[in-house]
Length: 182
Image (cartoon, rainbow, N blue to C red; front, top):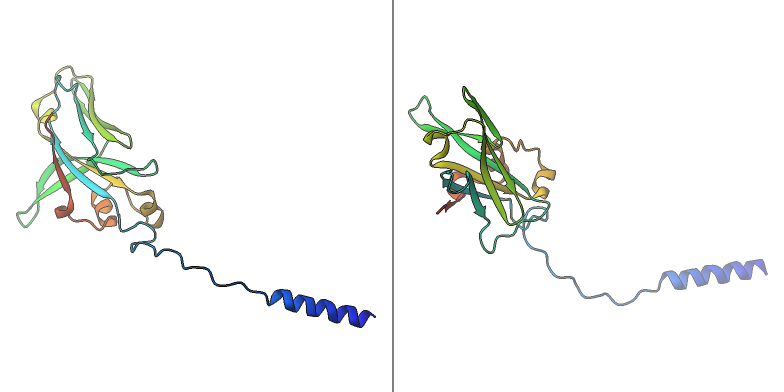
């Protein structure tokens, strides 16, 4: 009796294990890209503007229509701090990540920024009372929007604009220059 029961159990297991339904339809093809980034390695905008009492020492940059940022994106702002001549006579830009603090005899000047998924505000906080034109006029900034996925796969020094641009596979020609009217 035990032998018949065992054979029946083995036969039942074999029948149920062999059951297979029809193959389902294939899923939609994925987008070509880098590890789920859909080819988007980030964006870089360049703006130029002047701080004044009229704009409350704030430059407001709304992200362009059709441009989407996410809560997980990282936004960094860099200021064109200086231009130095290289040994070959070429001028090189010196970029610094914000915030940047300048200590002068009269007090402190700090360039800083805030951002949301819709915009970036770059502003000056100061204790000097009166700012000089070289501290306020025609200031150039680069705003980098980096997908968090990009940074989880790479080790990137986000305080270094060159390293950020390299991680984004971006050169200076790919930067979106935006005119500031305010």
